[in-house]
Amino acid sequence: MNFVEELRWRGLLHDMMPGTEEELQKGMTSGYIGFDPTADSLHVGSLSQIFTLMRFQKAGHKPFALVGGATGMIGDPTGKSQERNLLSEETLERNLQGIKAQLERFLDFDCGANSAQIVNNFDWFKDYSFLDFIRDAGKHITVNYMMAKESVKKRLDSDVGMSFTEFTYQLIQGYDFYYLWKHKNMMLQMGGSDQWGNIVTGTEFIRRKEGGQAFALTSPLIRKADGTKFGKTEGGNIWLDAKRTSPYQFYQFWLNSSDEDAANYIKIFTFFNQTEVEELIAEHAKAPHLRVLQKALAQDVTRRVHGEEALQTALNTTDFLFGNGSLDFLRNMSAAEVLSVFEGIAQFEVSKSDFEQGLDLPTLLAEHTKIFSSKGEAKKMIAGGGVSVNRVKCNSAEASSKDVEIIANQFIVVQKGKKNYFLIKLK
View 1 (cartoon, one colour):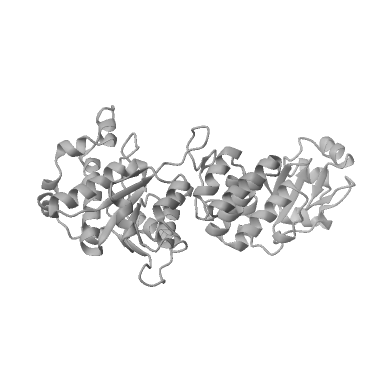
View 2 (cartoon, rainbow, N blue to C red):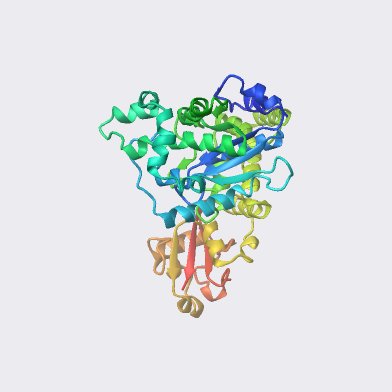
């Protein structure tokens, strides 16, 4: 597979230094992408870069993932309107471990010559004194050169300005590339288009310090068709960590993509080949209401990030909440897993002893919870067949809670109408 051609047809090639493609065609090339440890999990915004490394490895090259233990102490000013809070060493270390564990799920670290590697720039900066750094590195890149970068100019022209700490970020990232070029034979740095300035500073540093040559390649930042930021919802970031974003929520994020976005995402976030993508797009066009494209996308990405079992849970949850699926899949879950399934759905707590002693349904649904505003309203809807408990339609307002199954020894699922769900937690 030609790596650059693969990026081109997927719409993932933004900028590339002259000679990059020719360098890659010579044989196995080492290349890297840096990941910012601002949290203990990466999010879907990082996926395109992770997949770029995976495609790089599949093309026969050697991928490196750099986790910024040193640069994470400063914070990348690129695209930021103000300086970020500095992380403590303890927080930074926790974040680094979380990110490393996630990267190991995607890249192959045991495939011979082009096995992936993870490197941490703290390893070569921890014993590097400030005076040595400004003597060895600072003299090779001029202030004029650094100030010409767009990310620097924007901040300098703003009311916030830029601290010296952030100003040094560009030079430190440039030194990373030099260090890896010298010690790991690193010929290529990749990243998002917003990183172009930082990346080429590295190639310039290599040229000025040792007369060497290195290359740069960037991919476009992912945007929604309406121009809004990709990877954000009303609830915030869509994380790769299942504890932060449940597999169901993760699946729904992709499933809810617009047709235009799904046609773009299917190329960026899956490994379907060009023929398969074109066939899926054509099939979707015949019956857009079936959302063939969104389903293929959501299933493939969820499976790759969370695994087959988590995907099945997401599918079962979707079928349960939006179709006619049963709740059998909930019966073997832990309490934490059940809660993750119903994250974002209204929840109420009820005394377990009261529930087991027996409450009529209107009392349970109106007085012990606020699912209905009054017992009268509850009775009326039960009589009309509009209330189900654990997927069983309620036929009588006199029914007792003593006869209701308790899921995972703690939960009851109530459905009001067709689409309104509530979770009752017994305590």
